[in-house]
Length: 447
Picture 1 (tube, rainbow, N blue to C red):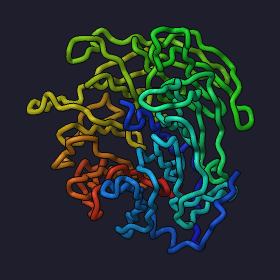
Picture 2 (cartoon, one colour; picture 1 turned 90 degrees about the vertical axis):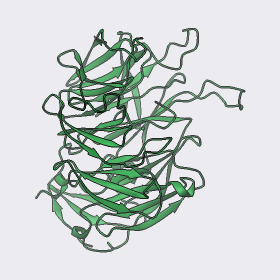
Picture 3 (cartoon, rainbow, N blue to C red; picture 1 turned 180 degrees about the vertical axis):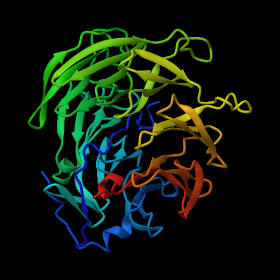
């Protein structure tokens, strides 16, 4: 077995994968039983692998694509279409979401990290679809903070039309790579169904509360509660009293978690084992195109940054929880030729240096996340945008590459965020849908 030594990661995955929710929403150190000898030396696989869904196979087929060898290493065909893909916190596993079926499945990319005292050993294992699955009703928001990911299952209020659907309360599943390796999770079932998200902070869980007495029925919650982990579950620790109407979307940074309300942003601060709350009201100018009030519905964040980014209607806003400030980001500054371009998706990259935006013209906008979101570059990435849906994209954590699916060209376009240039194009031979990156990060290669 080929090994490389690396120093321990101290929260290396600082990226908070927030605002990643599914298409219907406006996504111990034990090892798997089947271990094989590595197919080649680990250093020959540094660039990582992409998990790519084949849209031409009704999104039921998934490829594990080697970025070093530029070929598909493994294919998995499922009985039902893939709704979304997410990487596990340490980027070893692909979390495969099948929303209508309420199913989360896991594919092992083979990138193993085995702790050895003050360092890790890297080795390559067999690529395989794990027997481990999570089952629930309507998996919606998937949020990651540091080495934990939370999956929020909405549950269902119960219905007879259009089809009979039984009542199910909302549920939260929390995962780490170590838990996935043991086919385990930490879980919490909420008192009723709701559409929301949750934030994990080490042993703590920030989860929503919905007032079932409110009429007419609204699936969105109004308050946040604090839970503390107790074994494989969570115990209520505190009820926050600040109202947050119609909670939708959340994110976390080092000292704060935020939840988007219809009238502002609820801030939950943490100082050790102490938590406090406050509210930032929406700015007066936060309006829709028709002049009606808008609200933030999703976030992206990086734990090392003081400012998060939220999307309200067609605009992006910088949210600073420490300064109680929400300020509009002029991401089209200097682009007088396309003043009505719309942001389709947006994320802060794993390094925390860049805010990356994909617009409806197929352009990638690169902004400086550490310098008041100054526009650094605009790159023509997709020549023919799809009539429906949005191109999927993923960040490498080995370098500064951004991978974006181009279904019309049957390729993955590769952009170097550091040089802000279109770097290359990966010819797949099929139209890609969802995509995510798997592998070892830069930090894991530092000795």
